[in-house]
Length: 629
Image 1 (cartoon, rainbow, N blue to C red):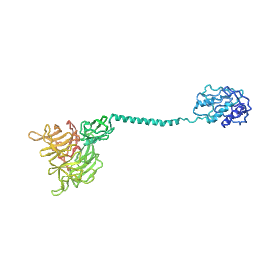
Image 2 (image 1 turned 90 degrees about the horizontal axis):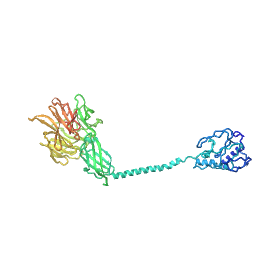
Image 3 (image 1 turned 180 degrees about the vertical axis):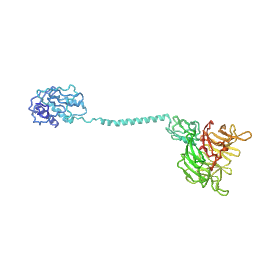
Image 4 (image 1 turned 120 degrees about the vertical axis):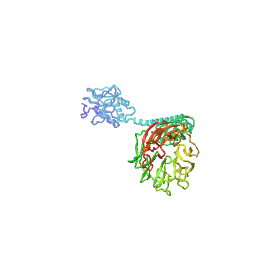
């Protein structure tokens, strides 16, 4: 009977095979078949064949192949899907039912899945196959087993028992087990690297970790501090171990890993500075190294005032090229102004009296500072270190018997508190000349009687200290607390810290008696009138006199041109010289502080005397105070 279709009656051999598969799935030992003609066993089958005499009649359902023995039909060839590795196979068209040996399928399964044990159902099916192979018709042809032991018998994957589905691969478990090992290895490597760097650091001695400095402040004011942070705590550094190039005076302090270099004078602009510390050691003083740090200073800028008879007066900011001037403050009348690192202080007029304004360096956030009353201020100055503004003040309604004249007043730039008036004893003296001491909050002043005093304006309980008699205060050197004052016909250098003094060195060559003197780090600018053989003035010159007395002519005018003021830049790198051209035909304006209508500022290289630019305007912010003429 044909076995091509499962809907047709099955042969006794096929029924026997189905029954054996069902009993194997239920875990029951297969009984011997009842009436069966003995079949010829294949060469790979067991030598004994059982009968079907004792077996009950099996229900007629489609045959299901076991995991070890597929059932083939003897009719037309049917395509079999093979999931095993290797080329696909389909039964021969003329072949009959194929049979395999009892050990072929389990051996192949073990070869493909060595870590997975056979399921119990598969084992039972194997036993049934070993004890009683199914019978096939006498005329059927037995298909030889595959020549390749790794090639599994063709099966239909749609009918494959679930017991033979492989268990999930253990690879993720292995990866999870490897992760702690990898993480531990990485952490261990990092620890070794950090330890190695620590050992190298100790063996190499200190190294530079970071450098901090406010380069803009360094060119604007003295006292800027550079912090060099080392890789380990430092032993105390002696100033002799430190050098600065280009040369600049400094002080040194050491604290832990930080080395502080304080520049006692402002630095030059647009310059690369190099600080070198030789033989630096850690606190163990075992290993020496050289520390080196560099920084670049920015280019200088300057504020100037322009008065306009037909419009608003303007304060503008410009570089030293003069091509990038920016208006910062505009007002109907501006008498004077001063600049600090954070503020602009501007003296203006309103209703014929003075008004004092303070703002940021961009002209924003303006606020009015309270004055001692309605009146007029002059000699406006600022203390960068004390954050103070000072001026002389005269009441509006002054008379021979009432009112205050030229009293010295100081107050905070923040606007906090009341204006503080300088008193000597119980009197408010009239001040002939005064100046803030650079790098401090102290004021040096001369009253109308010619007495010279110095007083700390930041301390409300401080009292003025008398320093003798003087006619003028020519200037005060930055970073040294040394003032140049005139006593009679002599010019002296007065130490404000201890009161000692010495004559001011004469210049070589001697260009004459200076009318004004402006100190800068390393020397002074001196303004001198030139005369002919008869003693008549022929012009004016500005000379640079070094600390050793060597003098060089820097700038000069002749004829009716007049030098109104000469001021060095904070470091002395440049000089701003204010000139009123053709003074005879240059009328004065109508300000409370009248000056010639046309004013020019010449920027000169102090070292070479080369003129860099001529700018329209006056009252350069490098000057401590405005022109007095």
